[in-house]
Amino acid sequence: MCVPILIKGKILIQEAWKENIGWDVRLPPSFLYRWITLACELSELPTFKFPRCICWMGDSYRLHVFVDASTTAYGAVCYLSNNNQSNFVASKARVTPLKTRTIPQLEITALQLGSQFACCIRDLFHHFFIEEVIIWSDSEVALQWLKNNKCKITYVQNRVAQIKEIGSSFKFLYVSTKENPADLLTREIVPEVPIPEPIFDYSNYSSLRKLLNVTRIVYNFIGCVKSGIRLVDPLVYWIRHVQDTHYPRIYASLRKELNGLEQDKLQFIKDIGLYYDESTGLIHSRGRLHHSNLDQSTKFPVLIPSKSHLTSLLIDFAHEKCLHGGVKETLSYLRRQYWIPKVISTIKKFLRHCVNCKRIRRDVKEYMAVNNIQWRFVEPRAPWQGGFYERLIGLTKSCLKKVLFKKRVNADELETVLKEIQCKLNNRPLTYIDAETPIKPLAPIHLWCGRIINPMPSVVLDSQEDPNFLDHSEFNKRYSQVSVILNHFENMWRNEYLTALREKHYGGSQAYQDKAPLLGDVVIVEQPGPQHE
Image: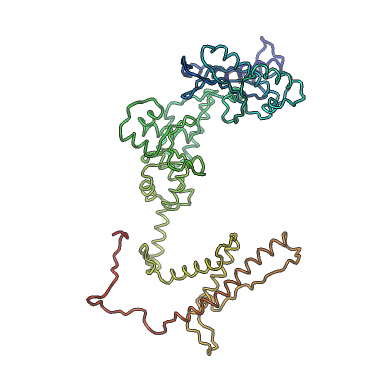
């Protein structure tokens, strides 16, 4: 269990031997610092806990041996597993030879050590039924050497022969580096030492950035006072603190430190699928998106209590990232990483006190009051209350649907089509078109610039070379496609819209009669409020 730390001492002794440092010579500063760090780590070993019981008589087991190698060390770690659980058995690590070897050659050496280690463990547990021995490595090169035995390097051939002689009945399989526990034997690890909570009162800070920056400064001070300590991320530290403060029994129950939880808390855990992540020490929510292709942080958001000061700091940070957007924008940003109960009411309560938003609202009200502007909200699901602009929106949507249909265009092409549609809609006649009158009809564009604006002419180019463009053929192809779309829109404008405009002209008749309803007439009753009321 202590091999990942002890191997660092062996590496330090080997490097001192390479530097010809005698036993009675004072260590150089670089070696002295590493030795002090190692001594601090060794002092923390008594705090480690692990189960002493490994296996039970009468059960069948599989022996899993994981191996790994680096430029400084190689090693193996063994586990016994059955259908119910797996337990750590033993681990072993050695420093690499003084003669320089490649990583694949060191990996095949680790496989040799793992095979020897597996034989030793199997003989030691002979009174247990070990039905299978599996050796795992994250080196595909070493596994391929072991499989085909075609490597011509003598060093590799000798070790492949020894492995096949020792482990003829063993299985050799691949495991990724991230899932290989033997990786801890070959790289430097530092025990994570808990810090007394809280290290300071975080409620005095009004900005998440400032809180995290101050926490990092405190971390640096702790690192100077006590070296050899690995501290968690500042944000993870404070989230862990608020979870433990606001959900102490749930936090302890998910960590299996407490039994007999209340029914309401059990229902809360079940409703949002809470679980404890040992890698971060945080409570996450599984939700219903765990089979989607979203990011891991979105599929398994971190639980944040709604009434903590950290929640206000997170909402303020998200609100600022959304450029002081509304509730929906802030909510969408937060739900990428966090799950906050009653989040909508919490966000609304916070946004009502946002200083920048209040200042903007005040400036808008002052401007409207000075310019005698009245703000009127249109009722939801009532497009007839904004008929003139709703009609323009409908015309624009209809033109886009008919012109583009299922065509795929990029942003520039879509902007070009929208500009052309805008030009045509602004050039539409507002008065009756008389074929005998030579005067052009009045159009909305006259109210803006006093004249009709003609669109850019559409020309379908051929495949002539043009040295002024970097990619002439592609440019001509895209421009021709846009021109065809615009020509199609021009034809539809003339053939459909203008004729329809003539047919739907009502002359001087009124669209409705302003008279009081009589008994028996069917009327529409307007009543503000939600639709279901």
